[in-house]
Length: 250
Image (tube, rainbow, N blue to C red; front, side, top):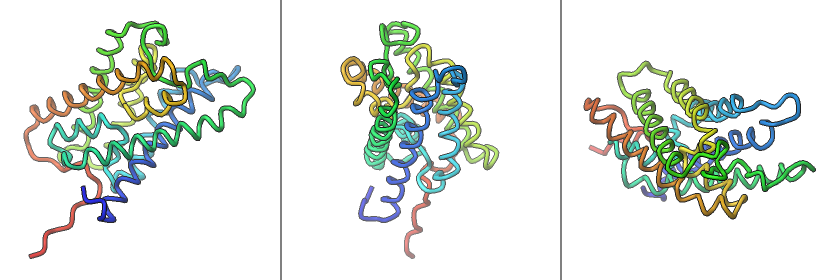
């Protein structure tokens, strides 16, 4: 990716903003609203928040960057032949930066409450003693691989050239909601290394020590999902890059 090209800069900034919103809204719902006395949104509400964050950003920036918001999605789309491999690193860096800024903003807000306790995990992902349901590392690893694989499968299908036009954000957003409904008790649901990295930097300690799994497992799952869908549907379909490249001069 040529970062001297203004379109490419716009794509990376869009990815940063989109991942900021996913992390801030999704993790913010868990940190601030999930257990609010009497009217907390609970597991269902947090799941919806993550899904809605992707759905809203898909309509807002899908035409600019393709709205990946997730290193595992970017890698999976590249593995599935739907994204240029040379653009993977700039997208991933932009996504991680967006997630870290979101976590910083969320932390600055959360510490304003006398009941805030960073030791509760700050929406970080974990396994073993730090899994909401005390699931083992192996269980968590398998869950993250399978859930990310299916997320990529949904994305590849919803954005295929023969899929119903205009409905991809809905399918993808609801898919992520369903993924969180399954995964929150297991690992607090990552399926997104950037989303995991932001909160882990502030939670520190165990969250940073376990962060490796929330990079390795989603990246493996994303690549499998992309490759599997490409094998099932070999017909050419559009690249998920947002801005179309300029036509070559004749």
